[in-house]
Length: 211
Image (cartoon, rainbow, N blue to C red):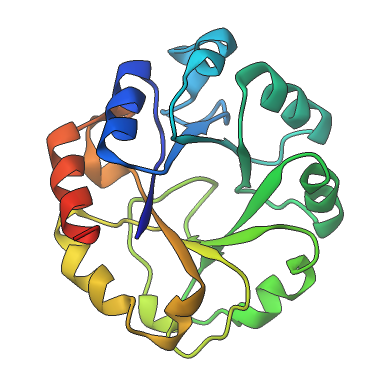
């Protein structure tokens, strides 16, 4: 199972993730986030990060031109759009770099209705927990909402995943919807403080879900 660790703010921790075999490191470019990467790392430092790990930039309702400038300045491999971006905006960015569109789900959402206009506009989806404002909530949504869905596009599973969820995730992989499960996204439940990860927790989790 592929893993994305989001909210990275320290290059040495990104290097450790790469050594663990984690596939994606997320950098948040949303100034209101406590994990806003430019408080800790300039673009030059992000661009210098090398290895097999894929650098993902997380943006919320950011001007497309600014996103594309940041992609170049930081050497990003993917862009995650976590706001209210229209399909047209997504498509414009996806013409330049691979795009993940995040959808925040509540119990009464019609998932197919939410994603239907984005099929041709983006490369991948992400399903996260509905909350007040933007960004992660640290809360888990009901994965059973996805159980009977046919997503037909690679997706990331996010939303309050904890170090104790390895067994649940392994079980989720047996659901029909998991044929399109591309990766899982972890963040706040694996931190000491916002933006600083508990690397031992991540290491144990990686070992469990990749076993």
